Length: 115
Length: 113
Image: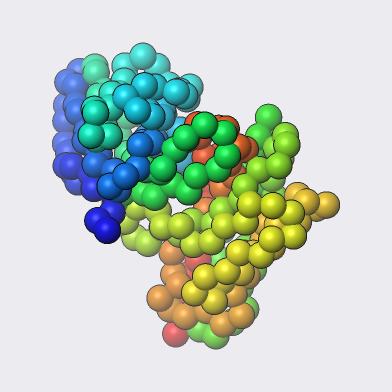
């Protein structure tokens, strides 16, 4: 079974621009979570989507948004980029559902550099 | 609130040495606990998990036991290899968390030949 894929793998953007990152989950997985990884803050949860609905959101400004499509693929968007948005953005997929614990499987990440 | 605390790194060991990476947690209820590993330039890979007290997760020679009385989930391996060099993350899922894994800061392990 194919793993989680993320595109692009690397991005360089300029302050003020916007960016869209894509994540394709493992087949059959309906939940996609997004995380930001930086050396200073570690891994921080951005948001989670399940069946095209955002179920949970971390403590990030409104410049960070996302969506999920009917095939469970997800995108996240960052508008008005700031230097501090430079990070590795990871998505993870799981079977999802209500309650319980579902193992998350991570993609390789998108390395975003803002100059 | 829910949180995970890992021992600070980096940890440097010689090949075949014994490894322990400490992890303690704070959580309401009965969380599930995980260890993930991240190799350079890659995403996170699930290494092992435990879903209830006294469960032992194991994989590739690594083990961790869910200790509710000490709220700990320490990672151990009896004999490390150079290929184990990576960053290790302890994480918890407090059930119904809807995708929000709580991670520790990570511990970088370097194994020298």
